[in-house]
Image (cartoon, rainbow, N blue to C red; front, side, top):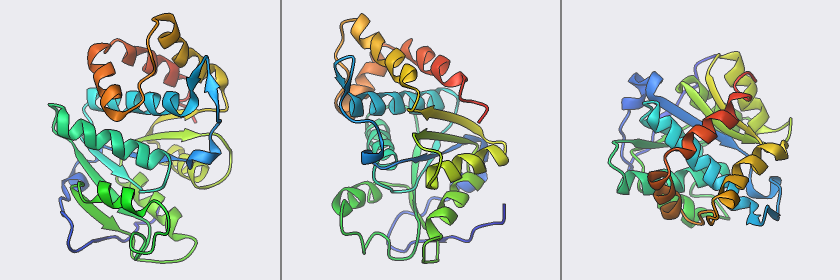
Length: 234
């Protein structure tokens, strides 16, 4: 993979410690919300099941010693991860760092939808890195940058084409650790959701509830790890 140029954006924190901490750095990839299955599974909203499983993957990363998280600022998985990470950063007792990676020049200022939510997250990050290019390939170069500077990829995928599929292929090519949730496999989500039904617990609805859940039931992380094992050889 050819090195991808980046710049630190003026006016935002500029903590670049992740550049020297490859083995402690994670990045994310995933689709936008409308690409994922809708409705419910065993009576729970699908989106809550997906977000809770994603939070579990973040907890596993922290458990495994990762402390830096690169987030590409796309709607869906990226913002779901940012929401949980920032809550975890503010309320947890483990030092951790969130770095936003802007895919092109003026991406944030030119946003037409979701801008307020993205800015709320960016203002709380440890650094804002911008890929200094524009055009249709800038998002792929953003993904290349995150893979190049990470040891593990956490992703949710439900189709074999698009930016997430590209990023996953790059992670495989670069021999990165991969925690991939292929939500085309309904059995994966069914097994995860069933543990809440079996234990007669409600699925968490907010970042705060997800954090509390994993603090109270850390054994659930072993379930998450087991479910992800079959996806480690993409």
